[in-house]
Amino acid sequence: MKSKRATFALSRPVLLLTVGGLLTACAANNTDSNVVAPGAEKTPSTKTLEAGAALMQSRPPIEALNAYLDGFHFYNGHPDVQMEAHHYCSILNEEVIQCVIYDGNRKDAKLMGVEYIISEQLFAKLPKAEKALWHSHVHEVKSGQLIAPGIPEVAEHALMEKLVHTYGKTWHTWHTDLNKDLPLGVPQLMMGFTADGQVDQKLVSEREQRFGINSAEKSKSRADIPAPAIDPGADAWRKGDVIQIEDPTGTPHSHSQSVP
Image 1 (cartoon, rainbow, N blue to C red):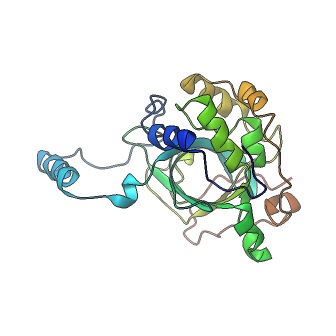
Image 2 (cartoon, one colour):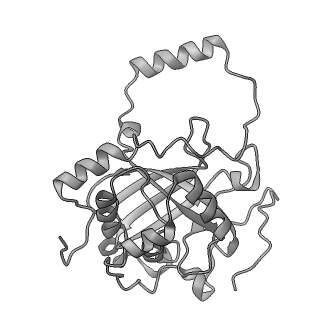
């Protein structure tokens, strides 16, 4: 069922499948973190405090993270520096989603950053300078790069019908893809891919093996999802308008290639 105004709303059966199953799906727990944080092992007293807090403290914002998405990012201005990104998201309303991003989906995964996702209606109202910070999701959806592991195909398809109409703003704060064992340097603005041939196929193949999926098949199954026109203010890097924070610490980010 489609409407002229695309939002995040799903039919009730699909919504229940999506919200109830995304985080508890068996597809999780198959991707290791890229780094091991320095430090001593947890002491028995720390483990006891941790267990007690888990039993006694409420965590409403964390419990609201009920959607799991997996995709790929690259550093704005440096499309050769790419990584897989595991998104754990909270659907705030029909126009806004907020996600925390990890470098894996196991218990020791490192928090890499955040992504804010908004509807095309909200994006259209943003000033030009702000739009340059955001990326479109059309290619990620249509190519099969963006997935919602572990839920039924019908639920994933319905979710992608909504996400194809959205834009994301992503900042990474811990650059674990570069094998840094601590969150060094400053946050970096990330972007999403917009055309075939941009993503490193090795990253895609490794993910396909872990999740037991085929991105090409997913792309075929999403052929019926209409590709909306992309706001010209998004994906500004394609026009040479690259925004990135200069790192005053001198921390190298392995950014060796400029935008083509």
